[in-house]
Length: 381
Image (cartoon, rainbow, N blue to C red; front, side, top):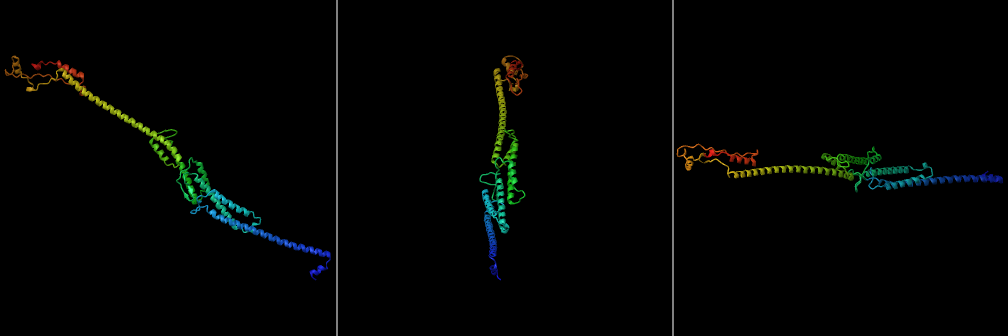
């Protein structure tokens, strides 16, 4: 007997019951099939989202790599900005947000490629952001028109530091750097920080040297201290600090020059005064000699017109006989054959001296008086 025959043999009530059971059974099976179909569709849609965002991240990878220098990827490329990095971060975040919005069991999806790409992109952008912060902080230590301390992979350690740089600023930059990293970028950062510290130290050294000769005013004109201070100031690269100290040294130099000029003028005056004294002494001596000579000559003219001198004829003897004959007297002259004794010539008056070979007027007057009072009788007898 078939199932149909059995149904035909059932009462009407039983037939209705069987029909109800069949309807329930058939409906449950259909619902299960439908439910499974819907779940698979959601999984497929979720996987499509994962694959799409993975492709998005792959496209961003090229833009992220462009943030780094082509010659040395340890450095940032020239011209990289914070806005550029932030824009890429937002794109990565958008991809991650789309991925996170999936409401199915992620374990049933293939997410390994996406997760790896997202991690790589995030790490690279974080590195770029940190490098940019450090690079900008280091570049801010230096200031020179149209020049940058660190630009791409180019490092310029010879730039001057900014005006009024404080040691605390340098310390804060050092805290941003990684002293343990030995990459070319971090080595460049360390070198630039050291250069800034060295310049700041040079300003302190020069300031100390200048204060030995100038502190609110010139306190020393020692040439060696000035030269030492100027040597240290000349090493400063910062224009403002160098000018401030140079202006102070200029005042010291002016004081040194004035002191030297005053000493020179004093020495020249001293030499002129000494020469004047010598000249006046020589003129006085010449005048005294000339006056003495004139006075002596005038004194002789007033007495006899000439100075008495010995008769040099006939060996200082007078012709005694001739003189006797002429006078008419008798005696033992030439006629009597007697030779008269030599005449006694009075000594010529000596010229008194003042001690320097020059006779003064009183001495010459006394000499003239003595000559006038002399006894000349023996000379004529």
